Each structure stands twice: as C-alpha cells, then as structure tokens.
Image (tube, rainbow, N blue to C red; front, side, top):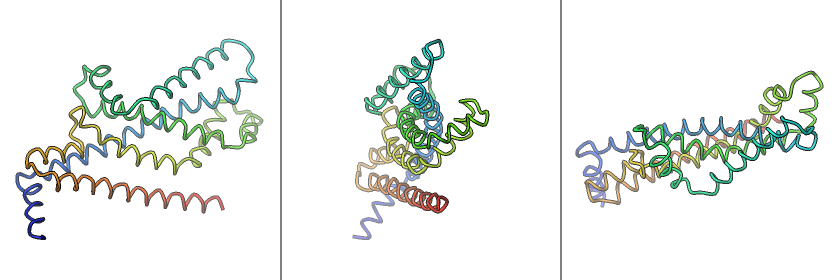
Length: 239
C-alpha cells in the first residue's frame, strides 16, 4: 500500500516537476485573497460609514441638499449590497472577466477586483454592526469636544468598531480564501486549477485533488488558530 502511494506521489508531483503547479497556484491563491481582502475592507469601511451615518442621522437632518445626497448614497449602497449578496460569486467572476473587464489580460487583477467587491459587501455589514455596537455616548463625546462628524467617526467610532469586529473580519478572510477556488473559471492558475491541471495530465484524480484539499484544510486550520489567539488577546485587553 505504501509503495503504491509513493509511486502515485512521484508520478503526480515529482515527474515533470508537476509540483510547481501546486506551489505556483498556492501563491496566486494567497495573492488574490490578500489583496481582495484589502480592497473589500476599504469598500466595507466606506459603505458601512455611509449606511450607519444615514441610519443615525436621518431623523435629525434638516431637509436640504446634504440630506438628499446622503439619502441617494445610502440608496446606492443598499443596491450594491442587494446585488452582490444576492448573486453567486462565480457568476460575478464570469461577468467581471467576460463583460466588464473584457479588455484586460491581467486575470489576477480581475480576480482581485471581483472578489474584493464581493467581499466588501459582507465586510460592510460586519463593520456596520461594529459601528452600531459602539455606545452612542462616544459619538456625543466626540462632538462635544469640537470634532466634526467625520473626525468623530475617523478618530473615535471606527477604531472601536474595528476592535469589536476583528475576529469576524478574520473569519471573512478564511471564507474568502475558499471562495477563490473558482478562479479557474477565468483561466487563472490558482491552487485548485493547479491540481486540476495535474489531474488532466496524469489522469489520476486521487492524489492531486486530495493534495489541494489538504492544503486548503491546513491553511484554514492555521488561520483559525490565529483567529482564536486574536480573540483571546482581545478578551484579555477588555478585562
């Protein structure tokens, strides 16, 4: 049994340096995940700030251009959240590659943009929940010492909200890592596609597919451990 598995391993990964498909694919997967999370976080902070600002001030704002502008922005944000969260990410990826960014030859950039926009919708709700969880007295205290609304959000509310939602953001990173497995639909040589290429060349499905699954599992275990450490540190800081 051991000799057979050894022979399969050599045939699938060692011969022809086919292990490079896995290593290079892993690098692409981590690259797409990392930059998509950065983009998603930026989008999430902006959209969550608009949504929470509208919810907190809509009853106090006087009728005028600013209220109309904020209402319009809030409506666009709600439309964005509805469309992105209501459609499968693989369909968004195909639309992005074959329709919106059809002139681009950089598949990594397309994947980062699509997954970043997708992740931003979920990060928005995470951060908005964190903003709404901050005591309203913190906002009033910021305004009472002379901060503008934007300064209060930037210096007082958002930093506290980030502390509250860091574990959830870390879990979103794990979910995003697994979602990038569909990058092969646009011909991107990610980890999953690398395993599929090996399978296509050796006509052996067991070893390459289980290797890909094992790598994803190990990455998720590692990141889950890091999330657990982060949560324990945050709890200690609150004591």
